[in-house]
Amino acid sequence: MNLKNALTCLLVINLLSCSPLPHKSNATAAIKNVILVIGDGMGPQQVGLLLAYARQAPHSIIKNRSTAFDRLMHNGQLSISLTHSADSLVTDSAASATQLATGHLARPEMIGIDQYGNAQENIISKAKRLGKATGLVSDTRITHATPAAFAAHQAHRSMESEIAADLLQAEPDVMLSAGLSYWLPESVNHTAYQQHLNGLAKNLKSKRHDQKDLLSAAKNKGYTLAFNKQQLQQAQGKTLGLFADTSMVNGISEAQQQDNPLRQQPTLQEMTQQALSILEKNDQGFFLMVEAGQIDWAGHQNDTGLLLHEMLRINATLNTLLDWLKGREDTLLIVTADHETGGFGFSYSADKLEKPMSLSGDAFVNKHLFQAQFNFGSIDILDRLHQQKLSYKDMFTRFDALPKHHQTAKELVNIINSHTEFPITEQQAKTILRTEANPFYTQNHKVLGSKIVPKMSVNGAFFPYQADNRANLLAQAVATQQQTVWATGTHTSTPVYAFIQGPELALQPFKKILHHTDLGNLAIQALKP
Ligand code: MG
Ligand code: ZN
Image (tube, rainbow, N blue to C red; front, side, top):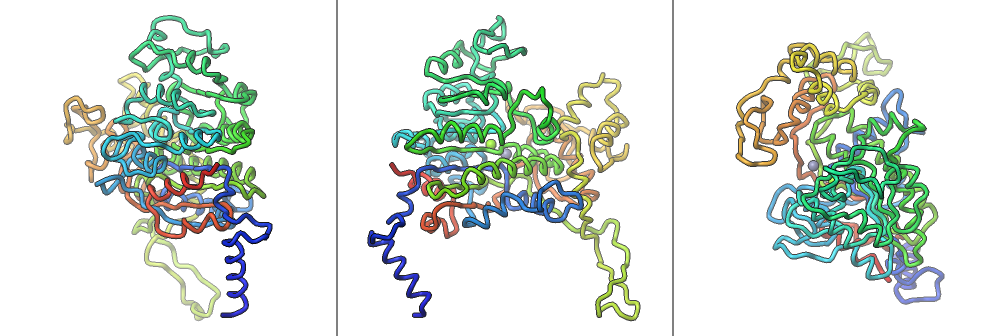
């Protein structure tokens, strides 16, 4: 045994035997707060896109070309985790979040119940049992699958009215997201309903099918209601923030509106900051889940420019969390994804082969030129992706808003070519607009129920969100220009990263190939009185 090993042993013996060392005898017992960040759909390739942009983009906006993931690597532990749900190869967000929240296997599309259908205690209810504060933050909506699985117990993720009621019953101290329409009684669709809304001027719509007024119920439970950024910043104590009807803005819009003094919606970073400042007031500590949920939406649409902006959004949010964590030894931070979305990657191709170039090295003396056989992708693609001005989905919304006789290939070219740096031709626009009889038509199916759908050229079964498939076709049209491939319009089973930060001893249990039920159980076990 060398001296270093001997010293390590001494240190370990001291730690284990409750010696009078100033350090805690059991590091996990010292953990007061647990923070779980979920990048929905953020597989290794999505993290890779951010890292490529940070390191290689000629005009990267990332300071010092260093990301929050660099900070996580510097301070903590990197593990990988398998995400599959019970008896399935692939998972969805509901099952994956249920597995993280309860430590139990679930089946796809279940919320907070195990694979047999039994409600299981989640990390929020354990934290509350221990007297800790709890919070849920998401840039999708609060009743959407990921946040829902941390507080609700329902047979299916689509039961958002029931989920809203469950969320209120679970009573996390902080809930910040969108989804106002699931909190309003159905009568709001017929009558004026402004008494709670502090002057929030908008056309309110309820998506409920009952008269439950969950906003009044929340007020009666002592929640402060917030409907815009300013109200959020003033909120103290228990806070329910609902900042849009159905979803927060996407990452491109958030970035564009960031400096607009009239901006109403808080950013994911601002919601996270406010959640921390409310939750940290509890002396017993807290559990906080933050979701960057639109990484997944960009992935489903195969929208690479939007994906980059969503990764910049989680990067900013993680930096805020890491600033708060600086110097703290009492908090466990877990940053992971629920699954990968899209089967995304940069790829080299046979298109536009690179020109021969002269290089100064010894291998190229005597006028030998260097030439790779294929096109390995120019780094300025990263800047051009960042310059995208509208999401694919928003571009098609604009197209569909045109009078029917203006909905032509030419008009689609105009819209797309004025909002991205990857122009398409009229011929490509025609391909995007082609339709066919739905090969997967399923009567009364919420997603597969249309008789006529966009015509996919390959692998149509993996593009089941047919209403959005023109976006996926657009992705295929610009694939060679963007040097990107997208394998699917759904999720893949790729193992995801789990970045763990906390006291050194608390990292030990994470040093293996995990499954998300392990990750959930370790997070739950880390919560101590
Ligand atoms: Mg989600
Ligand atoms: Zn998804």
